[in-house]
Length: 292
Image (cartoon, rainbow, N blue to C red):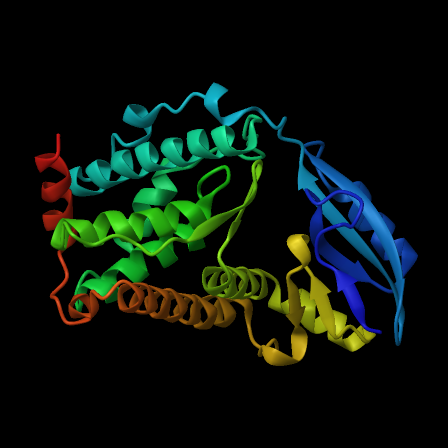
């Protein structure tokens, strides 16, 4: 009872965008989308009947390795430190995509274009003071929050944590974050998956709190994202202005990833990193250049 799909059960590329109890209002919304938006409609009958509109952008699903990344042009107006870090971040992303293709034996498809300026903006929003684990968690959180990569944003964020902490402690290595299920299938380990799933819940609620408040009024109690991730609507404060939700849930997301980094360093016996002073953005960029 009260179960609603956030991603359309027939095609996970479609996500929930609008709900309304009136069919005319739903139809008006459908015809109002531009031609770059594909639409699916699903009817629900909970405490109140309503129509749910699911949308996706009609990006072609080009293999990531065939996409062109014009990084120099995109970073022309970005400061030197941010440019250095973004370039390294994109190298990390390409490595993750390549490894994923080797693991699964199929090309990784992109359903959106990358936005390297958004990655630079994510770095600008990081508070680069405090402990090493604080800043590593903020870095991962902001990269994931921006969602500027075509896919693998969480894996890239986790890889960035290790890369940053290794500039302070070359002996540091992340505990294993994913495991081979069978010869062609890999999955996040259970302890990591709990953080990944909560991260996705927070990001979803942050974007859609008003929509979810409407769903509660229709009798919805849980939403199901792809991969079976469920969002218990009663566990999150939904009754707030969208700008307030963006701020509050961004802070919760950041704290979640700081907790993740602290657990990671504890698991591998490098708890001293929780007291090690962080590198600034300038120092981190300089450490990257020293590797070249």
